Length: 257
Image (cartoon, rainbow, N blue to C red; front, side):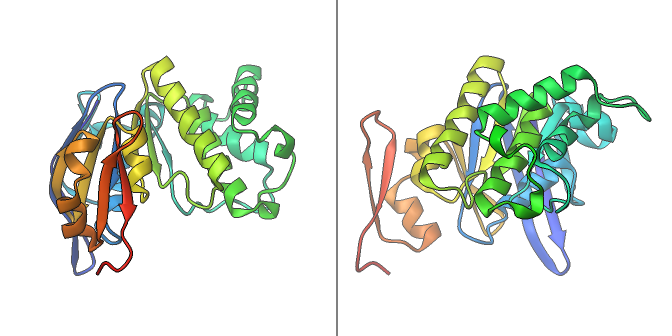
C-alpha cells in the first residue's frame, strides 16, 4: 500500500532523511520511532507530499507525484502533530472538512457527509463539543478534533503524527483502540509516529527505527525494541521484558546515562 525507495529530504542545509526505504502492506500498522530530530515527522510529511523529497513514494501502486491533490486525499488522510485550527470554526465544521475530497467543486456537503462526520465525533467522544469553537478547546481536545477530520476522510491510509500528544491516559487508549478497530474492520493501513516505545510495541504490527535520518532497524516489535538498540539510539538505560501478551515493555532504569 505504501512504499518508499531511497527517500531523502533536505531542509535548508541539513539532510533530514537519507535514503529511507519502507514497505507497509495493506491493513498493516507501522509505527515510526526514534529520538527527537531523527526525521519521524519529516518522513510522514514526505509520504503525504508536504515536503520536497528525492527518491520515490508509491501509494497503492501509483507514484505519489502522479496523484492529483483530490486523488491523494481520497487515498491518504493525515493528522499533523501541531495543527492550525481556525479559532472561530466549530468542531463539527472543522471535522466536516475531512469530507472535502468527496464534495464537487462549488458544491455543498451532503446529508451523508454530515452523518459520517457526526458518527466520527461520537466515536471520539466529541459529540458534546460539536458546537464549540476551536479556539476554546484544550490541547487534548484539539488533538482529537484533528483526528476526527482525518477519520471523516474515510481514506484507506491513515498517516498520524504523534496522535496521542497532549492526551490524557484514558483518551490515549480510546484513540489508539479506535484506530486499531477501524484498521481491522475496514482494512486500513496505518502509519504513526509515536514517542512512547511501549505503546508503539503494544499496537503496531511492525516498527521502523529512525536515527539521524536513516532507517537503522525495521521488524516486529520484539526485533526492534531491544535493550541494545534502544540504548544505542536513545541514549537511555532500559530493561525490556515481555508483557502479558508477549509484546515488549520498556522500563527506564534509574541511574542510567
